[in-house]
Image (cartoon, rainbow over all chains, first blue to last red):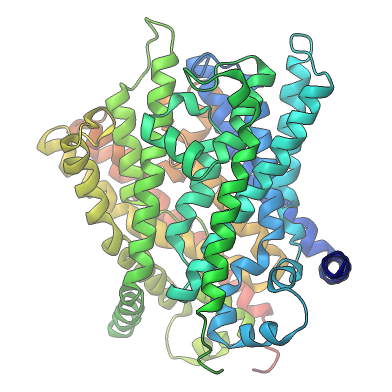
Length: 275
Length: 273
């Protein structure tokens, strides 16, 4: 009972905080719009590169361009959502350095809610827009050949939620590591941005070590790529049964437990240096 | 001249301090390079037999690693320090110095790019050239340069790429005087530079109208052209022409940014600080 009440309170506060951050960003409308268009442009060039590679090589491990567009679009959608939500995690370095983290600890609201509510970055809509449009474009090209029944749609939704969560959890791990290193950790970008780059291409194309890394350890591939393969009727990873493809999004659970445990450890061992 | 040298030295020293940040960047670049090379390998594996690609897989992988090695030299965006100068109003301090502002900013940008390059290039070079073949990833390793001529062409073009990169950095920074145009300039620069320098896709793999376009722009003289000397697709016979065009572009970008800065400074109003 008490848990439900505190959960409801957290949700209420999160909505308030997120709403306020959105309102404040909307104050600078022209700047915001330009940022969105800019991001769309920068990432649009990436998709153009993919398109041009198709002109040269015709297929990627047997995948067609619309199929690749669906994968690319879904991964970018998840990444954009996580990136927009994770602003507070990204701010851990400055928060620890200037002592403002102590203030968060004093407030009667769970830390994660406060960090998540710090800002919902609307600028990321540029990548989101690109992700959704490439996904939609690819899917519209495939619809005559693949069936999208209720199970497929449910699986797609699960993949989107799980994929967003995995990226969000990577940012959380990064934030947890900041307790030790204080400075932001550029090497974690290898896993966030690198993971996004790697997951935008079918895992089938990589060497074994990378396949294992992105299914077993940082399960971006398991959450997005494997279920998508099932929907598209493709071989995800050789030797993997169909049920394992469908269960892919569940891989977010152990990773989530790991990330939360690491975060908890960091918070428990944190001692303020004043500020 | 001494003052500009001092500005250069000061900025490079401050960049060289941040070794931990550079180390983190290097790790990220190893990882990105590996991912990109494996993607490239998959493209080549998927190609229909008999496909005539203008680069072999080994060449394409080398192209990618060269891109990681000189990554810090590529002018993705304007100089963040300059951006801060304008935002904080400290730009006024630069303006009252008895120096040419443009020369000062150029010296600082050059120091920023070169010092970052110096911190990062060697580990990635050693990793991609020696360690990858040793651990059985020779197919996606960096191949040695195509003879001494190739190495010479690469190094000379790279020496020209450094001032060109600094000039483009200052050119982008010219737009920092208004917040809106700063965001726009950074974005357009990031998109144009990453694509048309060859950092996103090896340019030799592209044909048709894109090829026409990238040949008309200065950005390939930052990366693509030096790489082609390393790979041996351009030889010593092409060297004078390449260097001449690179120098012409350098001159053009310098003149353009100088004119823009002069115009911007005439309209500049500093709001206290």
